[in-house]
Amino acid sequence: MSSAISRRAWLTGATGGLALAALATGPFAGLSRAAARGSATPKVLVIGLDGAGRLDRVKDADTPALDGLMAAGITAPTSLYANPMARTESAPGWSTIITGVWPDKHGVKDNSFTGADYTTYPDFLTRIERARPALRTYAIASWAPIPDRIFSAEVDTRVATPGAEYDKGTTARAVAQLRDGNPDAVFVQLDNVDHAGHSSGAASQAYLDALHEADAQIGELLAALESRPAHAGESWLVLVTADHGHTDSGGHGGSTWAERQTFVIAAGAGLPAGTLRHDVRIVDIAATALHHLGIPADPAWKLDGRPLHESFADDFDALRPELGKAVDETGVDGSVRGFTHTPPAGWSVDNRTMGGGGVTEWRGWSFTTDEFWTKAAPDQQRESNVRARGVFAVADGDEWSDRPVTGTFDSTLITPAWPLTGATPAALTYTTHYLQEGSQKAEVLVSYDGGPAVSLKTYTADAVARSETLELGIPAGARTVQFRFRYTGGNNWYWALDGVRLGTAAPDSP
Image (tube, rainbow, N blue to C red; front, top):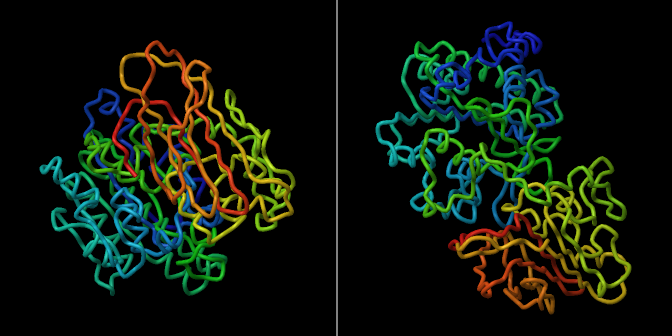
């Protein structure tokens, strides 16, 4: 596909590519009659754009192929970790995307690959090979460590594009494979956007030009799918992502919002067109690819990702329209809407013993986003709260104390009274991101049928970026259960919670 194709032509389907008016045309045969009958053969194409995590710059660039994918499916801006979990570099970024787990599991913290544990957490193509050996897997990258180190030798074909060929060679080889071969799962990485970021910065025209060039290469890949002889009987899922962003002046590896930005774009396989999601993380790509190919994730794999075909929104995410701008925080720019003290419907916050004064945004339990919270106080491990999604709850005594206070931080977040039904053992599940200091304490309490609240778990040591499952000893005849999350302390650290649910008992999976 020529890079000269206009954005309008691509979006209207005039090129024979994606069509907004008729999505049954174009590279997504999952919308064909075969898919409607459930007889289409599922296939996956994952495209990685190195250093292209700045979705704001993607939208500024001339990127008709990406525009078409966003119009046809899901667009999900998301963010990365920072030190001490990992640097915003390619090795941890691609390892996270390809394995479907965060750096605290796969072990890659920087481009040295020191500590990598791909034995316990292998790449998604290797998992495909082990589950269904007959499927054909193919990985190609302009950055050689991806096929050489992250993807295992169990993958059918791994190609590190010779340096002289670079992204043009990567694209040409991938196009030939998609058009003339019979792959079931393909990973393609293009590198030139990252080079433009390093040499000229994300604010430059050169960065926009590199995005345009990469977009034209994506167009070639999509055209190759559409030209396949068996295309009408196939259901292709296309996923596009990036390993990290870039600063305006150029560079990455640090903790700034520009460096931590990334995204997931997904189209095909019945995903809803033109959808914006805030509950998505880059670890979801591996899980989504496996799901599309009919390979269920084994709980023993301990994947952090979940298929995009499922919605992960919880009660806190319903607060997004209510989020306001900074009041006292000076590090958060005025365009960012990211906090509220108003709890979701059915929830409440008890601040009867909460101290006075302090920073408005953090006076008692607040509901916030990764962008707002980390910009308020960078480089204090808030960036490691990777297992939260969308809007989450925060009790932050450290930030509250940045203005004069009276008393201590003492605030309790209270869930609705949830009904207890069925004979299945019940459990409370949530993600916790807790950093301990001094006399501060975090406590989970439970009560049944409005009775006294008793302690279920207490945190007096770090519990950073964990998923927690607490089994309940439900009294005979109990009809409802309610939980309280109480945080007490002074000018100490913080406690962040998300995904609070009453579910069935299951093993803890930190």
